[in-house]
Image (cartoon, rainbow, N blue to C red):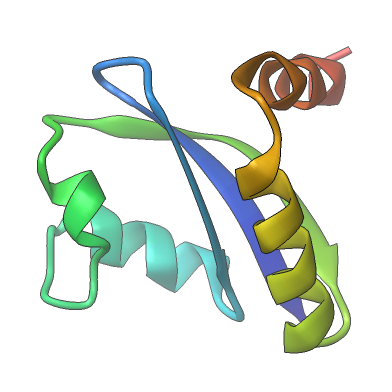
Length: 84
């Protein structure tokens, strides 16, 4: 299983990524390890605000690419929908 996820940083910016192990990936970001995204390392903290799962890496990568092209308002809309 593969995941596309959105993190909200302490500066209220959004980071979108994909992985096959969401729990491990979040730990890598929190520990600011060398495997963590450089972008995330600049922020004091972040929270996982959204994720979707897919059967293949290809599907996850296509969705990640699609979400990254969306305007912020559209991203915020899917994040808020998740919690309704």
